[in-house]
Length: 400
Image (cartoon, rainbow, N blue to C red):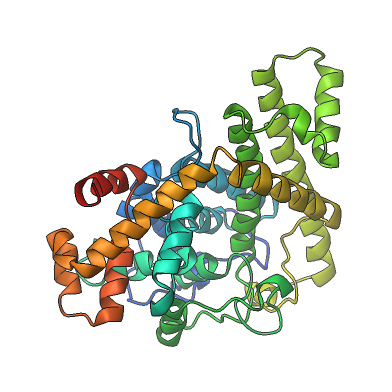
């Protein structure tokens, strides 16, 4: 169902011709009446915020580190930060802010408990049954697992929100797939859903979705540096080996000599975000002038993303990611905690797969009529939805 014409009193900001206009949306899987008070992308944003999966993000780890405290990021705080940056990028590029925000709010819904440690072991447990992918699981959540409406499963989101969720990092097949992702298989659930509700997997998503993807990178890098410094996994001096960060730290030293560390960290983090956002504005404006898209479909058919970092900033981002991988995600203090998390997830999977009746009745009932592969998927869905705290409670109950 296409949202042909909305109420006259909904005065949306003027969009660039290549922006996503909710009045010309490709619609939803199940037809709905247009809201008298909200555009369709606003409704998608609101549905995501009110979903059970979104609330669970408050108790899922962003990066699983061996320190407790209220100041480290969770999936929820990270998601809110991504949404804020995505909205700022969309506003600066005269795109639809609601769609950029909705895509940002949805992008991490499919993550498991215990950060990437949980995802890696759940993928290994599911290897014989199609594997586990957090992006595909997010699609399962919004199209199947959320059960809030009388007429359908899922949230019945607009095409543009769904394509942003699935393709915010670029096309999944065809000649425009980035070289580094060409060997990666498309998860079965995405393929199956695409047969029912085609998402043009060979094309880019909207510019709004591309804003959300860049916002994720900006927030991830800046705030993992913040958390890593606060956890004592590395120091400000360690960051100086990265030229981009060394430049920012030198700037802080010049403007604020002798600044206490807690303020220096804040100064660094906000400068990282600001410089990446400013670069994204400049590079995206350059690409949009060069491509001159006349519509959202022109954006989809481009050979490269229209929202991007410059080559220099892309290089800086890669250097930050490489540093964080070795000095934070694979830090000696983190690895034992990761191994324990992996042990918990693997143990819970084996327990519930062998005896589905030990799961809560709703999940046991879903598993009863299934074959082996179907039972594995139910168990995977159940574990993927767990918060860190709930997974630890389940481990105490069932694993001893």
